[in-house]
Each structure stands twice: as structure tokens, then as C-alpha cells.
Image (tube, rainbow, N blue to C red):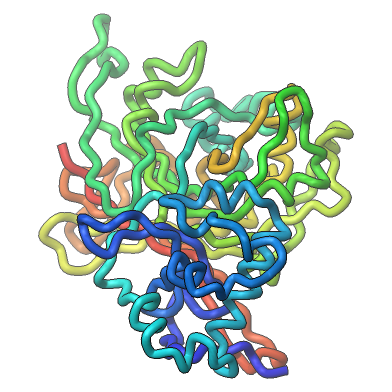
Length: 425
């Protein structure tokens, strides 16, 4: 079977082949209105122009104005059948064998814009944001650092997906500068605590599930139907001030150490695009309670990487490589647990996975683990090390999925986008 191919030339190393088509929102000029789009190669496809041309002609989208909105929330609220219809329509329009867009020079000029000429925006209005703690390796390492190796993971962690309610107002798009937060840190000797800029600013390698259709207040989502409520995944960096966090988190959990900024990649990769990369989730022991027991417990084989580039240095250093498939609690279990008390999720809500760490030291998902809370400086090059982030550091998180099979003729497609951020005081 021949691989689906676009009439638009797509570089072999592009993150945006026709098999992906992630959704986002852009502005062409500073004065332009935000518009929904999908990414294809080095272009954005303006979905408002496609809608105005009457090319969303399926039964669920033909009369909808969801792509004439400044964000994706209305589209997300339509549910998985509409998401599938949109994806199928766009793959057909962009395919090399379909003339409707390929042979319409006027529509191509209006709807296909070079990615280098547009500004990407947050694609959704995020009403609420929750951050989970779903990596067993991360939980074990953090527990060992702060409480010792005798009992690194609390008993409840193996029975439910732990989470806290984050701050939606400080979620920003990739490329937004990070201002070093100020706050209290633990006393270095006797009290009082010190106050000032965080001395232990850290990245957290995460992904986040974007809620599509929500649920009514008081009506939980069945874990085996939770996937129908998740539109897709984004890369996420939940920046952390480890010193502020360590001083404040007992007894109510993270607050100022987390709420100063959280960064998202601009493109939402749909679960339909990620379907070829499903894999078995880790075996859970003890077995979860019935409301969390999935008929088929799946993760995704997404390779993740973090690079740090100090100010004035030309090349970045890879500091960790890990994989989404290390998550102990799945995104569907996270969503089902979130709603089991009747909590109502809404389109555009965000569920962070928590830091994604693997079992090996070079697969840890944050500097807290990589440097063991600053005890083991991490080499970036022959004369530069890091305990935590310094001013001017640029952090880049990359995720990709690859497939190479006889059926696809060694065609490779990469499914996640990049985010790059600068740490400043």
C-alpha cells in the first residue's frame, strides 16, 4: 500500500507531513484576527478560508462556523466524529491526487501561508488546568531526594493518579520569555527563610492532554470512554522553582513554585494521528480499582528530548532523552479519575502528565533529577555545567514518533512540535 502523499512538498525531516496535520491558531499580521489552521510541511493551512470555500462539506461540519472562530474550543466541543470528519476532509484536500485545492491557484494563495510569516498563538481558551504526577520513575526519584530511599513513593500513589489544580492564566505559547520568579526559599541555617529570585529554576518535560468534549457536573466519564473526550496532545514545560516549591508545598502542595509560567507547544497533535504509535502501558501493581481498570490500557511511543543552549553558545546540548510510554498512569485514567467525583471538564481544559522520566539517569525529565537537586552538576560541554537553569539559557523540548515498515516504504513521520524558551530575570 502506497503511503499517503501531499501535493505540497514536505521535507523528509519535517514534523508536519500529511499523516500528522496538527491543529493550531495563528495570526498572519499583528492586526489580523486569529484563525484556526493545520500544519503541513513548512506551511499553515488557513481553515477559515477552506470553510468559506465550502470545502468542509461533510454532514457534521458543512453548516458549522467552528473554523471561523478565533480559537479551537467550538470545534473541540463537537466531538470525535466531527474531529475525524475534519481530518479526513483535510487529508483528502491536501493529497497529491485531489485537484480541488491543488489546482485552485487563488484558494492556494489565500489559504496556504509560509509558517515563517505567521505568529502562532495559544490554540485554545484554557478554562482550567490540572497537572498530574504520573511517572513512577519521577515520583521515586523525587521521593528519594526529599524523603530518603526508605519510602520514596507514598502508598496512595499506586492507587490513584495524583494531581494538583494549576494556574490557567499563566499558560503561554512557546517562545514566550520566562521571567525568573521571586519568592521564599528554605532557610539556609536558622530561620527566617530567604527571599529573592529563585536559585533553583528548573524545566519539566511533560505533555498535556487537551480536553475535547466535556462532561456534565455530577456525571463521571467511564475510563473506557475517556479517549473520546481527549482531542489530542501538546508538549508542555511546567517550569518549576524548586526552592520556592520545597518551602511551600507542605501541606497543600505546589503554589508559587509552579504558577509563574507554563509553556505549551503551538500545535495540538490529535489522538487519531497518534493511533499508529499506541503501545501497551506498564503493568499496574496492585491492580487499579474498578473505575480505573481499562479494558485496553495504552500509552504512546513518543520519543522526547530536551536540549539546553546557554547564552552566547552556538550549539545546544542534549540533556535527556526519554519516552511518553514510561507513564504509569495513562491519560485516559487521568481524565476518568478527574471526573469520578462529578467534576465537570470543559472543551479546552488541559491535563498535564507531570514530568516524564525514564528508568535511567540520562532519561530523567528535569534538572532536579538529572543533578540530584544540585549535588551532581550536569555537563553541557567541555567547560560548562548546570545545577539549575541560569539567565539566558534556552530550553528546547522536542517530541516525535517514527514508523518504518514495508507497508509504508520506510516513510517516516514525526508527530509532535517543538517549543523553545528563554529564561530571563
